[in-house]
Amino acid sequence: MVNYYTEQSDFKLPQKMRTRRWLKAVAEAEGFRLGALNYIFCGSMHHRQMNVQFVGHDYFTDIITFDYTDYEKRVVSGDVFIDPDTVADNARQLGTDPSEEIFRVVVHGVLHLCGHGDKTPDEEAQMHALEDRYLALRKTIE
Picture 1 (cartoon, helix red, strand yellow):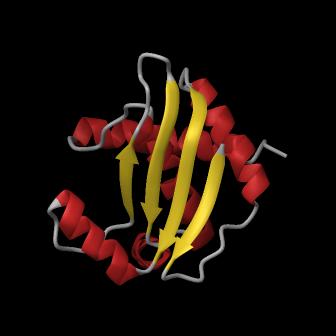
Picture 2: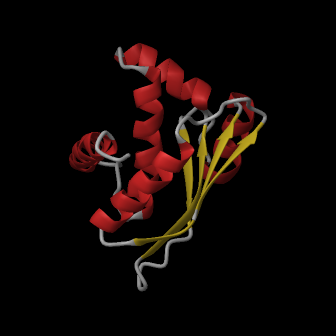
């Protein structure tokens, strides 16, 4: 079950039902079932405070993922906090469409919950390739 919430933000993710179907397809392609998956879109300052408190980084970031996945049962679960303002800033810096970038970050969270990392250059390249693959899949989901 995929749920969407907001905290100190008025952001509304478009196409929520389609996105649920897409995320289910992504999880299945990665060999998982969807469990409780919560997306919380929050304001930049709240997100930064969470980054300091829970990750130990004092800067703005686009995503913070709390992983509750049961890897033994292959059930993806977690809380994914996204700062839509930082996502939009990143899109401007990268020269990408902000609406495409938000979905890149959404799938990035699921990929983390499926066990993919992005700490090394090789992991980062693999993560980006997976994001591209699943963004293409999203276009086929009705």
